[in-house]
Structures are given as structure tokens and as C-alpha cells.
Length: 500
Image 1 (cartoon, one colour):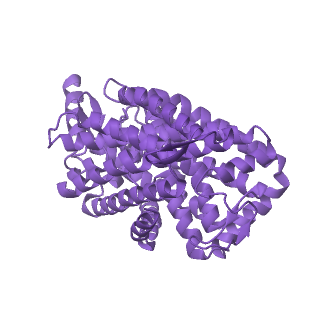
Image 2 (image 1 turned 45 degrees about the vertical axis):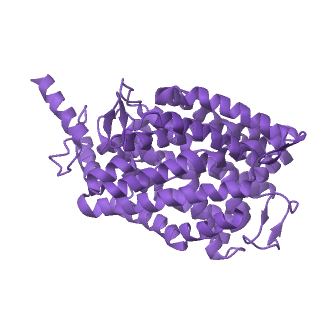
Image 3 (image 1 turned 90 degrees about the vertical axis):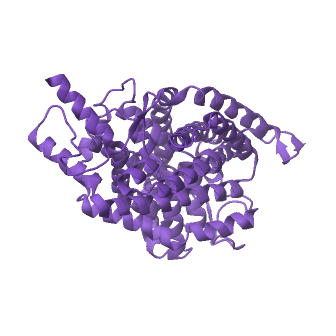
């Protein structure tokens, strides 16, 4: 199984995808005149400016839902894997892909807003919707929808659940081994899997509003607590910080694991963590109630900063400042750097737990396990919403009753299986899911740009209204030459009727 997964990943995550992700980020950064820097203050102001409605959630709730997808096991176990296989320099490339990816996140999330629909009383949108409407290629939209359902409904939830199971086992001990039809499973992992599945079932059967209400409380609190704990570790070792930053930057260009490994693992885990370009963010962005599509695009661009520059950096500094990591070339037996036991898996949260435990004995490992539980669990919730949205997209054409219920059951089984299986297989399957979505979405948004530039037109329109000092923003897609943005055309028509 591991060999099959690795060979598929070798094709999906070739250097072409790595440079496509970086290239698209640089391309959109230049086109938007580095919107991620120019409108940084506006991003923060917009977080709290919109309100929810019967059909949509607020900008902050949409940020929380998308952040729950972005802030997950990639921020803890993913950073460890990037360092473990790519060296400290991989962290630098995670920063690069986050900075450039913020512009990609703006583009894809603005497209999600422009081409959203009202479906069964709630807003729906995402890459499948904008690929169909802006590209006019329904087959490509269907391909993305199928790939996304496979990735977020089956492959990726197992990665999140796997990290929860591993963290719980490291913090609490394995307990007894039980022989089952899928192999030996520790009682700790079995109990953890059962609890996670039970809570997941309760929330996902409550719909997007329940998901949004849960994540808007949990995600900011846990992210703040986690970063605060990292600040304590950094504060206790503050004299080493300049040396660690120098190590990250210096190793990025002359890395111990080879330049290609640092870039490859930094970009792979960077995209996995912040999801810029992957096509997940636009689903939550489309569900937001805003006056102008560009507003939610800016909010989503800010979420990339929170994910990588704050949470991922917190993990990286904890691991590197305590020296609790190994580095080896993937597939090799010899270590380039070995500070921990040979059996410590870089694809797990072990580096992070050992690092924090070394500074706060008896507290560090359990704290990471709790943080990882909430990060990973809220990510699974975001994955469910994304998968559900794509099932709803397909349901517009294929009317098969009970598809959503089937999705919920399959996802719960995936979470249970992932929680009790080995980390390497789970991460490999997750990487395939991320890679497939990223390929389809990045190519899609580049084609859409060359066809009609809708996200860039929306940004120009928003900045013009902002400069004019309007109190209430409006969006007229037809006046901007944007076709098939039916929701906004209808909204403008209704607003004019009310005025008259």
C-alpha cells in the first residue's frame, strides 16, 4: 500500500506542481500589485464588518470555517515533516508559499463569491461553480467536484484523525493492544477514534450554521493558546532566536537535505497547511454575507497569514529552538541530523510534543495533544462542508436521494480508520488529495484570468469605491463585463426595486 501511494505521489507532487504553486502566487501578486501587503489594514477591518443572514454566514464566521480547514495537523505534524525531510530551510519556503499564496487565496475566494448561488436557502460556491460559469467547461468542473469529494470526504479526514490518534497515544500511552480485522489497535487509539467520530456525527448532522458557530469559538481560542505556549518556549530561549532565524534562512539556499528537498517539502507542506491555491478556501468564502466579492477575498488572504506566518512559525521555532528534530532524505536510512531516537516518525506530531515536553515536563505533550485534537477536528468539519458543497453541486444535475447521508457515513468511517492506522500511509493518501485539487484549481484560476479577469476587475472596482468613500458597497458584474454572476445581478435588481 505504501509503495502504491508513494508512486502516485511521485507523479502528482512532481516539481511541476511545486513550481506551479509558487509561480501562480508570484503571478497574482504582481497582477494585484501585492494586494496582500497594500490592503493589509483593510483585511483586518473587514473581519468584523459583515453580519450573517438567513442564507449566509458573517465574514468572521467564514474566516473561522476556512481557518478551521487551514489550521490543522499541517501546522503541527506537517511542519515537523517539512523539517524532518527538507531541513530547517523548508520553513523558509513555507513562508514564501504563504506570502505569495495570499494573493492566490484572494483570487480564488473572490471567484467563489462572484459565482456563488443560493441553494436550499443557503449560499453555495467554490471552484466547481466558478469553473463552470467563468470557464464554461462543465466537464472540468465535474472533474474538480469528484476530486474534491474524494480528497475532502475520504482521503484528507484520515490524516487529521491519524494525528489526533498518534498525539493521544504519545500523551496517554498506548494501553493494551487489541487484535482486529484491520490489524492490532491500541485501546487509546480505539477510544480516541470512537470519541472523535461521535462528536463529528453530532455536528455534521447540524449543517453549516452549527459548523460555523462551533469553529468561530474554538479556532481563534486554540490558535491563540497554541501561539502563546510557543511564545513561552521562545521567551525562555530568546538568546537562540537570531541563530534559529539565521539557520532557517541560510539552510533555505544551501540546505543539508539538498535545495530541491527544502523547496519541495516547504511548498508541499506549505500548500497542505495554508491551502492557498488548493481550492478549499473558496467554499467557505462563498458562504459569507458581504456587500462586495472582493471583501471576502481579502479576508481569506489574511487567513493564510494567520495559518503559516503565526501558527506554523510557532511550531517551527519550538522544534528548532529546542533542537528536538531529525533530518534525513526521504527513503534513505542514514540521518543528516539526528537529535532524537531513530523510530520517531517525522510524519507525526512527535517532534512538536517532545520539544514542548522538554521545556514543560508533564504539560507539553498533553497540551499538544489537546491543541491537535481541536485543530484537526475543526479541519475535519471544514472538509465535510467542502465535500457537501461539491455533492450539492453535482446534485443540481444528478438527482440521487440520500447522497449527503452517504457522504456523512463514509467520512465518519474514514475518520475512524485514519485514527487507528499508521501515519505514513495516511499522510501519503492526504498528499494525493491535496495535489489533485491543487492541480485542477490552480490551472482553472489561471485559465479564468486569461479569459475574463473577473477577480482582478472586482478588486479594481472595490478599490475605486473605497477611494470614493462610499458607505455601502455595490457590485454590478454586468457593468464590469463579468458574465454568469447571476446571484449579484439579481441582488442588484432587487436593491433597485426597493429603492424605487
